[in-house]
Length: 146
Figure: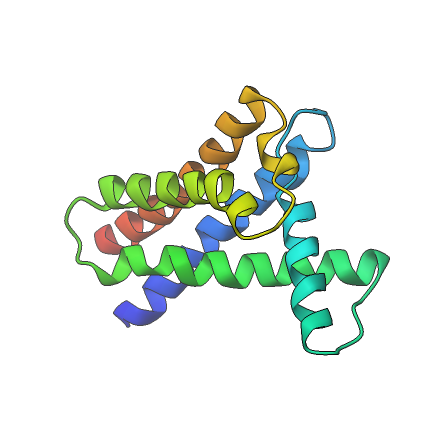
């Protein structure tokens, strides 16, 4: 049961991250565009395998699904590390993922402009991932109390 709860909590955090990202980017031109980084990464990966890359909405939806799955798995790890200090673990996981998105994107050969355009963009990128980690911790804490 602990595994299922960790996975559910991780996916709740990933969903929160993506809902926040998708909502704010509609209204703020300096919001992080993590979706664009994901689309580039997916396209390059598929091209390297000689697989046709989806276009338009199909690429967007495939990227969104991949993002939710990968972040859900990542955040799930918070639930596998015991019940103590959940919020600290969630914060550390979120901040680490956010700084990774800002600092590693360019080093991985991807266009980092969507997450580094302005200082505000960088801060929001880290904040979105932090919120995902904290939502995961909150769900795990709720499961623990139930």
